Image 1 (spheres, helix red, strand yellow):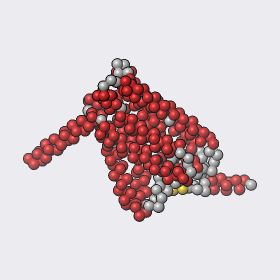
Image 2: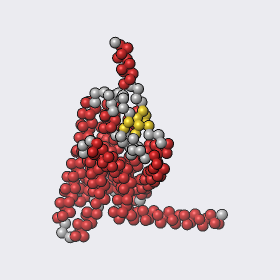
Image 3: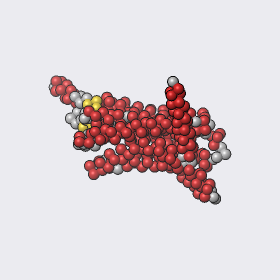
Image 4: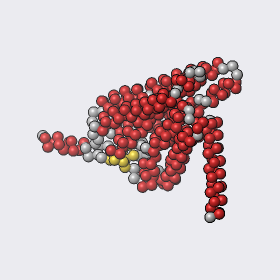
Amino acid sequence: MQHVKNSEWQNRTTITHFILLGFGNVEDLNVFLFLLFLAIYLVTLSGNLLIVALVMVEQHLHTPMYYFLANLSFLESCYTSTILPRMLVGFATRDQTISLVGCILQMHFFSTLAATECYLLAVMSYDRYLAICKPLHYATLMNERTCILLVSASWTIGLLLITILTCLLSELRFCNQNTIDHFFCDFTPIVRLSCSDTQVVETAAFITSSIGILPTFLITVTSYGFIITTILKIPSNTGKQKAFSTCSSHLTVVSLFYGSLIFVYVLPTTDKFKDLNKVFSFLYTVLTPIANPFIYSLRNKEVRTSLRKTFNQFREFSRIHRKLCMFD
């Protein structure tokens, strides 16, 4: 009897790797997809890190709004780096396997960054609320200490919430099935493959999601409710446009992020919505990070001015360098 139990336990612990099905049978498109996602990854990294560098270098961007933007851009760089490099390896080697440990780690880092982004977007919404609705008290309320505290809290809460979830997930056993019908290791597809009792981890996931998403979403929606009400009370059209321009970029990012997030985690997870679920997962994990730098640079005059100034300085430096090389 003991031998039977040991054999059953061994069978339940045989799976140490998963297979990510990704976008299905696309072997003929591997080279094209590799080049496409490599371009997306490089543009995402360079765009977001450029914003971080601009905020650090340009003195007139040393304000709370741009401090939060720099943190968001850094987060987006990390965010996309948890998914795209593994996808690129899969396209290049045609090996879609990922170890159990690697899969859980990918889920951990991705989920931590997603939870942190929810809090950062809420903080940025609150910042715009104070700037537009409480302009006389803005400098006092949103001082340097408060900015650092809000950003630190966002990263800390995101990390703590997901670490609890990851610890519970790592205790599960996996057997029989090892294929994940997704292009990355998300929480729900992993849990479905477990042959353990998943009630505790699913309850914990519901609680952490409620703590992570619901309050931040309510803060964001409430902030913009007050912002829009205040803007509508401004008598002149010029004043309205100026006020709205300070928060339109952030509102666009919030709409993209939460819109796709809601579709992924609220739509029924049936076969009918499975492919649509992948599309919206792709939207908020890959396309939103690459879109953010363009949204902020194209719709923000100060960022455009800083980019132009930096480009001109670089061009002038290159011109001087070429002249020096000619003399040498």
